[in-house]
Picture (cartoon, rainbow, N blue to C red):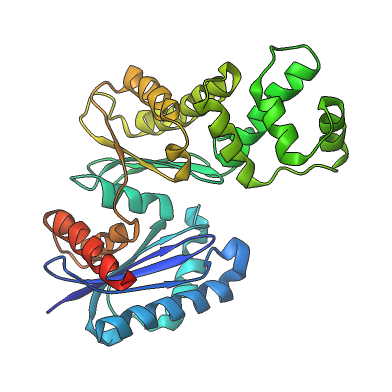
Length: 328
């Protein structure tokens, strides 16, 4: 029996999944953060060793049982970083073929029928990657925020909402329920106190505040809804750029949505869809429901020369069942 390893390295946690050649999950493990920007390359190595060892132990396998490995690595953003990441992986002692990608690419493998299309990630930050049929990649800078036109992650949404509050205060815009919600959240006495305190650093903006913005939008506040629409248009615009790079405007393909922001308010996905469909009317917008680490296993199969597409559905279902069992 041949076995394949997939690893999804993130900024807060890392997942490893092992499956057999039929797409049956046999081992899963979780470890801490592995993004080299946060933990260094030595920290990445340590996390990879820990999560791989645990997954192999759960599967009852040895390292030399693996026939292919695929890894999606947060922080692997540019080709110039490839060798440094491979050097960090080398201490694992893998002898099988290995392929590494930016972690956003795993969503394409996990969320598309044919293993090509576009993924849009929006959590604390945002990212967008794409692959065409020939595996040519399209991309944005990735997580660079305003200067690169990629400002539609959770923190960016919060800042946009705060701007609406400032516009009420300085009379550049209309009143908004975001103001009272932020006053309650921060404990500020009034808008003067909130704006001055934000400017002087007395009131910080933690990522959890984005949920306040979603709650206000759910209540129908016009300015909060405009923030939702803005976020969707920004994310959709990122995808349009990638679609143009790949020259797939007239094709049928999936755009996979990944990250907690898409759970915040439906208007985000609606505005995103409208933006994309003006450029690529046949694109299918899909929410990723499978764990992204599934894409790592499929990438490992591809690295080993296996037709991973025929294994995808079985692997997704098997992984869900396997992870449910692990919880009990």
